[in-house]
Image 1: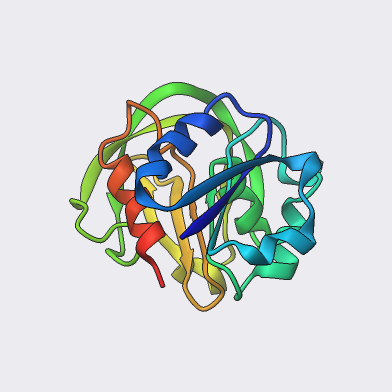
Image 2 (image 1 turned 30 degrees about the vertical axis):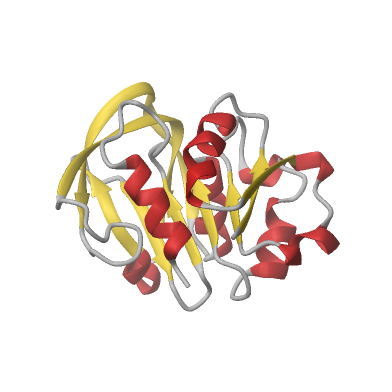
Length: 187
């Protein structure tokens, strides 16, 4: 199994890579502005890392989603999930309170791909100032919220798109490795 981890210039990217390395044959970390779409089809999975800014400010995120949605499973973490949510028609709103290095209780709504073998509640580490909002017709993508009702995870199995707003690679997140392993095992 080969995984491409797109680095949106985030300090947590290599924590994600180190979590993933024992789960697969190869994890290649490529910076956002160095991604070549022609090379991506050699990967079995793509992970869109966290990062500063907004999805629209990245070089490759939208192109990756347009070309590989439905073809290669894609997991977005924080910024990556925000990009996937926007790709699915969602909106971003700035949070009134910035949450960096803060744990919240995650409430699993659907125990599907990412949350298989995960308890219905667990703590997740947050590092974000934006939140995702989905239109009524896309509410079925939501698989987890936090204790305040903020969307924390989405899944669109048909298009092989998955996202978590929390950081599975953070020491503040319980079951982070299991969540990543569930994505890696998704066929």
